[in-house]
Length: 345
Image 1 (cartoon, helix red, strand yellow):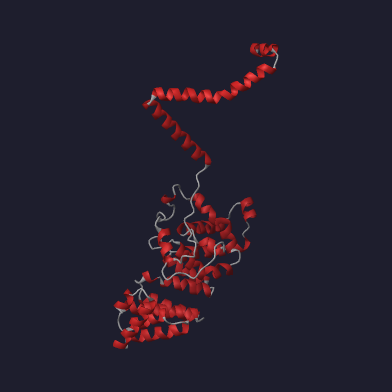
Image 2: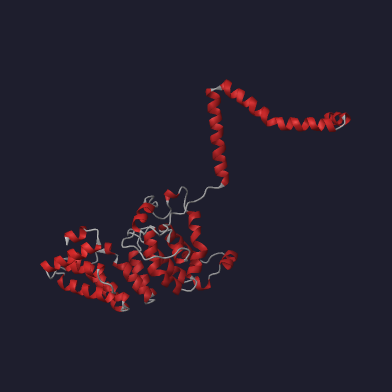
């Protein structure tokens, strides 16, 4: 199996897994690989995972991984209540294995059941300032807050009377989610086409946004008005974030290397989303350009005073030449008495 994990070709990995089973019929990790890479249906994958569970022994990491996969199989096969129970049991039995993100799978299953009170209870435990965040945590929190007001939300009415406390909480939750991962709204609002999520994802990246929207778009559509509220408010996030963007606002600075990593994770035909750039106002750009030009002229005048004097004389002569030409023409057409009166004035 160590050889199988090192192989880059899927067929070579599958072949090595079968070789491992020939050597040891109770090689749990071989059945895991076959379930994930050779099985063509969820039912077949579930059968292989059950075989792996019988052979897992006392290896905690392998055991938890297999049980989580079995819960996900149950969820995909429509046995949502069974999946929820399996996930809850796992979280109670192994509370320290939070890095497997079982709670995120649980949130998705609870949303499928529309058990919003249970979703809120899970968020209360895992949406903590000291714990790592994810698109699932941030956007699910925003969805629950939006659910309280979205069915009656109207941007026109809100602009006239201002936002209520509940609406403000929902908007702030959306802004928080968008700052964490700014790529998600375009997929939820179907401004960008969804693709099958990649095998691995990068937190705060386009790959995470694709995966979140792929599995959670249905939950946003189920809550009346939630997508409308998201559409009306998500872009306001970028006006609130301090400039330059690297400062961040609620989270640590957005990683600049995210785009490069996403290009490796996502297929070549997919147009990778990038962090929206905040455009500088024209006045700032104009002022910066004028100051730079003035500083350059001052430096050149200090270094080459005679040459710059000649240049300035030539520049102003060229600048005022059209004006002199116009004045000469006007003198030739106007009577001398007019120019005498104009001089007196």
